[in-house]
Image (cartoon, rainbow, N blue to C red; front, side, top):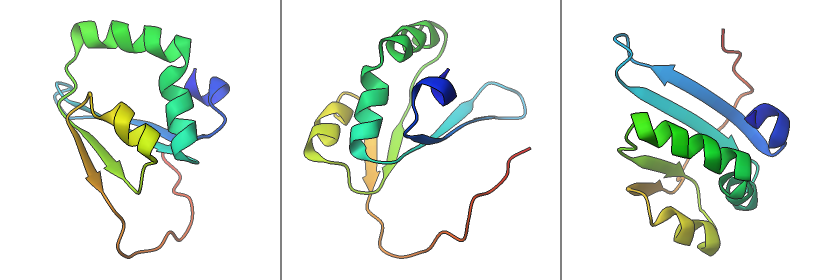
Length: 96
């Protein structure tokens, strides 16, 4: 659904613990505006309501420098923002 509807969602991965009681969702967007558009997508909002009936969002980690508008939107979650200080990206990783 995200892959088809959110062209600026660059990465969207789900990772489950071995006992499948915990899940980490890794999302990467082209920009703050892309993350906001994803959040405002009516299909995504409907999907999240269904997910939150069976799961609890414990924490939202944000890596980068969100715009003021995205920062404001993130305040409703238990958000930790990490600003990049160093590093590089060598290329895309293939997941199997």
